[in-house]
Amino acid sequence: MSVIDTLANDIAPVIVTDAGFGPDDGTVFHDLDGGDALPCDLSGRDAIRVCFASFADGRGFTLGRQLRLAGFTGRLRAAGPLVADQYAMARRAGFDEVEIPADIARRQPEDQWRFRADWRAHDHQSRLRG
Image (cartoon, rainbow, N blue to C red; front, side, top):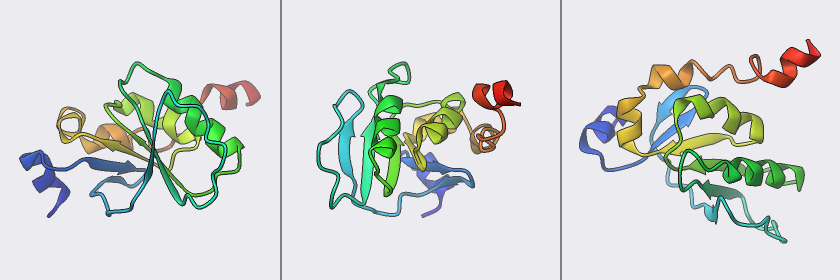
């Protein structure tokens, strides 16, 4: 089933990467709530999904950054009702991809997310260092 079929049927989340929209590949993730504390033991975890309750709750970005600083090198996914404007922030925080509901993908099509795929070039810290 294509991503377009998924959007039409509203049956599965859409995965956003720097390449654009794609389907979920079935990877089994260890889920963490965006408000959770950093897990003490990261061993044996190849894929972690940080679940955002709302686009207005930034704690998930902090948790993602903390996971990377703690040495997590596996696949890191942000999941929830994030918006395209938050894609670059998610990537800078250390997330590899974002999982969004199909209804958000319909409201904010792939081109809006791909526009933010050059996340390394347009951040505030880079401009200050410039």
